[in-house]
Length: 180
Image (cartoon, rainbow, N blue to C red; front, side, top):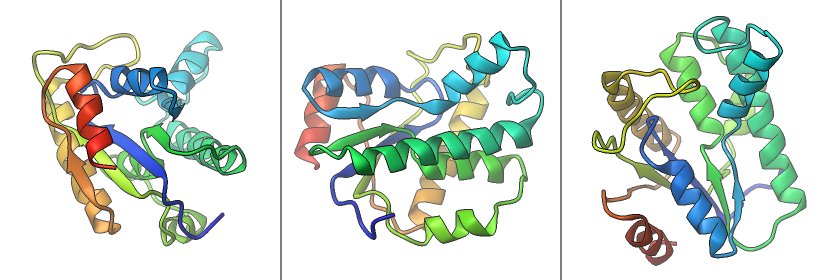
């Protein structure tokens, strides 16, 4: 992996904060956007009757989430085109692992020693837009806790974390573009 990717940005936060909607709008502006891997893992596991799910085999789910996130990151390096936005970063997988008391590997520690992203944009909990669905089963309280944990973890690893205000989607996009 390269030492520093100056044009890689993460959209993170707890569940149901509008990350995917925001990423879709950034994509409409022509930015290269990497979707969240966790939802696809859940869909695949449910479809194939697998157990690597956050409500079943958390360790296997975390392993798959890390591996798929790393693959997407490495694939992005090969296909880098201008600014790249990730719907969750590698540290989101680590956040899940820490919150579930799952151990990290030495290889994960080594990867996280290097700067991977330029800035982290974090979306705060927003009760008015929060909904659960077949892949997002966290309670409102869990969503708030995840946001707090996520912020602390990215700061711990030395990233600049910028909170995106609660406002309509076009203003959120404008806010991000002004803070690149």
